[in-house]
Structure formats: C-alpha cells, structure tokens
Length: 451
Image 1: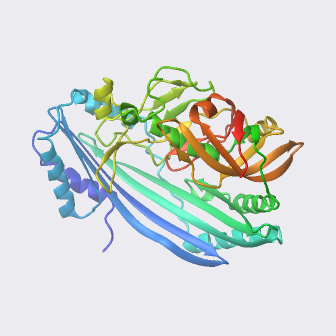
Image 2: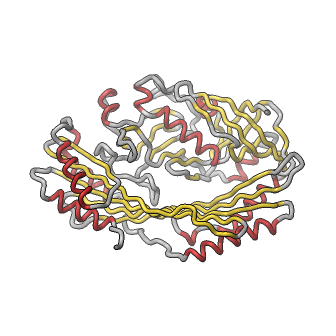
C-alpha cells in the first residue's frame, strides 16, 4: 500500500473541518519529510539513514478565539482526533482581538510566497554513490600524505500542502535540502590532522562535488605543521562557519521571554545603539527555498519579516502572544511548538546577519599580521544573561603576500557587546545552517589566548 501524500492528508482534513459549525477561518497543512543519508568509507556505500516523517498542523478561528494543534500521524482516525481536539480547544482559548482581519492577512502573506518553484532533480542512488567514490579518489590523489577519507550525501525533501478557508485549491511547495561533504586525515609529526568540507544546495545539479573534494584536501594539507597560537590581541577574521554559531547564540538574548525573565544581557538596551553600524540582524520567514519559512507561527499569528538589530541598534525583540501581552506590543509571529513535547517557546524562522559586498580576498587583506579563524575545535559556550561566550578555533596567521601559517588552539573568551561593537568589515559570503545564517566578518581587536 502506497504511503499517503500531503495532498491526500490535507483533502481529508478539509472535509473534516468543513463539517464543523460556525467557523470564521481555518487552516490545515501537511508536510511529508523524506530523509536519506549515504555514506562512503573506502568506496563502500552504506545507507545509514532512510525514513519518512509526517507533520500536520491545524488552526481554527471562531468568534475571535484561536485554537491550534500539531500532530505527526497520517492515519485518518488520528487526523479526525486532531480536528476534534482543535475544535474543543476553542472553548478554552482566550479572546484575541488581533484576529478580526485574519483572512485578509493570510491572503496577503500567501501572495508573497513563490509557490511555482517546486521542481526537484530526480537522480538514481547509484549515481550519487559514484559521485561519493569520485570525491574519495580525488582527495586521496591530491597528496600522498592524506591517508584516509570518507564522503557523505545527506538529503531532506519536504513536500508541503497548505489550505485555508475559501481557497480555490490547496497550495503545494516542494523543497529539497541536499548536503554533501567529505572528511580527510593526514599524518603529522604531532599526530594526525583532520579537515572537512561540504556544500549545501536545494537542487542536486547545483552541487559542486569537485570543489568539495579539492577544498577538503587542501585544508587537510594546510594544517600539517599547525602550531599553537601565541596569546595576544589580534585583528581577527572569523569565517561564516564560526559567525553562524554567534548569530544562533545571540538570538537567545533577543527572545522576549528571556528579556522578561531578566535572563538576557540585552534587557534594558531596547532602542539603543550598542553594536557596530555593520551589524544588522533580521528574521525573515519568506526567503526563497528556506526550511524556516512559515506563514503563521504556532499560535496562529501571521509571521512577518522582522529586523531585530538595525545598524547596531536593538529595535525589536522576538515575541509570542504571551510576551507581547507583557510588553504591550503585537506578537512578531515567533511562537514555536515542539513536535516532541508540545511545549510552546519563542523561536526563529530564518535568522541571519545582513551581508555586504566585500569578498573573501578583501577581508583577508584587512587582517595582515592578524588571524583568520576558519572553524571551531570545540562547542561554543554562551551565557544569554551576561553575553559572555567562549570558543576554541583553528585557522591561519595571515603573513601577507598570500602567505599563511597554520595555527590551532586559539581560545576566545569575549562578550557579545565587545565583539559586535568592534566589527570593521562584513563579507558577502552569507552561509546558512538550519535556521541561522551569517557572513564572515573582521573584528578590529580581539584577545586570543593560546592553549
């Protein structure tokens, strides 16, 4: 028996919801997520992760009362239970005045989404496996000092269908997120050195397999002979792989629930310019082909593009309905609900730091005599209460004239106020994680300690 499609699920939900009396507005969406992970080790292909997951979201509006439920089942009996559970929840929901214009708001938001680009590349697994073997061969042939390598192909396909009251037909969107990568090891006097490289795209044929292999091999060889960094104050270029982690961390301090509980170092600085003019941080739920896209949050509030920090000035916090009531503002549409626990929390959609027009060569030229740190060697630790953080990274000392000296064990103990107020230049290389993105940037003065 074939598995149900999101269209079938939404159609069944539509029939169930249409039988409910006196609804002012309704929304139903279903998402089918297919996972696949191929891993190659010494040209041997293993399927480590394959599976399908369903997610269902129902929202009902009646006389200013909103109720929503989330489920993970595709069975008809479970769907019926979810619909009745959602309808029963209307009896206990508080009166919400903001939703008198809900049908008009959702119609406007739908018009901002490009629903036409749903084409996915169909590729046989054997071709993917062969590409992984080619990556391994290319890395091993790059330099005899490379002794071991493996490659992987990680695929996530989201098939989503969305329906609202009065819609002529449901809207459908397919998004694929494909990540390929490689890891390699080389012998070194002080022990083996390791490197990795990856590329993430939404279409298979946009993946740059050769670049992943070449970059992985070059990084591995460049780390042979890496020396511990000398403690001191440096001008530092942080790569996007590090700045992504910083942007992800600072969102904790931008959450209104953290500010409300006095657990954010940004409490009391609303409306103040405390960072560099180069710092603008935005959360946008309408970006093209991003997995964090959403029309409504999990409390039914229409989402919106929200600038949280503009040119160093904190101009907004991320709110759900509860924090918005406390601060006497409108919700920014950042309510999230855990699929596992059902717990509500304040979460980001697609949070990123705005890039500029400077390329990597421009940025590196600004740190001659300083450090270019490319990746962390240990997890970043962060306190939203104080803004303090600590990370350990590896990279290069920039000697000038395209000469670099590999270094490792660079420990940074700093504070977000300090690092974000000392940013001189921001790059154009905006790179994304799951829901967070950031470009590389140059910090004018940063204390770095050696191990």
